[in-house]
Amino acid sequence: MRRAFVTGGSGFVGRNLIAALAEHGVEVRALARSGNAEEAVRLAGANTAVRGDLDAVAVMSEAMRDCDTVFHAAAKVDVWGDPADFHRATVQGTQNVLDAAKSAGVKRFVHVSTEAVMAGGPPIVDADETWPYPRKPAGLYPLTKGLAEQRVVAANSPTLTTVAVRPPLIWGRGDTSVLPKIAEAVRRGQWMWFGGGHYLHATTHIANVVHGLLLAAEKGRGGEIYFITDGAPPDFRDFMTAQLRAIGVDRESRSIPYGLALALASGGEWIWNTFDLKSMPPLPRSVLYLMGQKLTVSDAKARRELGYAPVMTVERGLAELAGGPR
Image 1 (cartoon, rainbow, N blue to C red):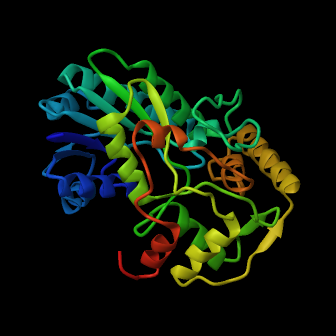
Image 2 (cartoon, one colour; image 1 turned 45 degrees about the vertical axis):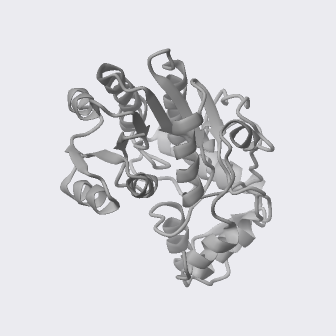
Image 3 (spheres, one colour; image 1 turned 120 degrees about the vertical axis):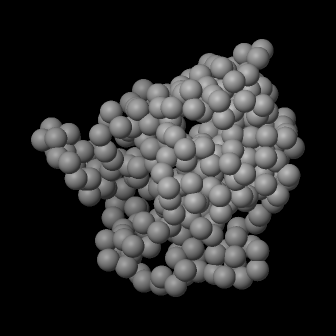
């Protein structure tokens, strides 16, 4: 790989991906929709910050010229909001990046997906890449990420090899989404464990996410999906408590029975949707489905086909989070 184009480069995954590509001597061109995003991608190591958003197909296509690979990490990452915003950013945005890549003659397209695409059906236990999409996804994020992933897989062709990578519960130093929000809820006394919180949950350290994406770009089979994980899943409550303590948050939280939480989440969403309330309900169903019960997946396919193996252990990742050596 000589040149790569990255979307979502100012986000947690994107920044780390850009840094890794730069370390490998790859010329990186990164989409940036604002001045802050431009600064972020340049600091991460991008050679060129391409000003524009996911609607700018012509801008992206021109910037992708002579690129070997496109890494698409941009999406609307939230648990509630306007359906039109989710579809425009995540579904149509993905289609726009695919169209730009085809127009520019890019050979490989790697899509950052998520285990959330399966949320809404039965508990996700020992799932592999053949696990079906739910009939009723648990929220706009699972819905639109699933639709985007399906477009990526369907776009595979002899001229454009498309691959999707699904890392569950991404974590690590520099996380700007999951851990900071949980930490703030704990500080405010608003965090509750679901059903005690003691169940296995698959995780993926950011270093392992990036490693998996690079392998997918090199070896991924066209039209295929790959799970990437840290290996054996930890106990969710123990793992999150260790993360919180690593950043100096050590406060006991209450627990709520899972069944009661599901009733509250479903009822809350019904009220918010019925009355078109603009704020976020107290407990979106997607949070409960993805963090409130056992969730385990198999990365055997990535190990077999990509030669994947974690490059970061949970123990080292926690030490790094606490300020120890990388």
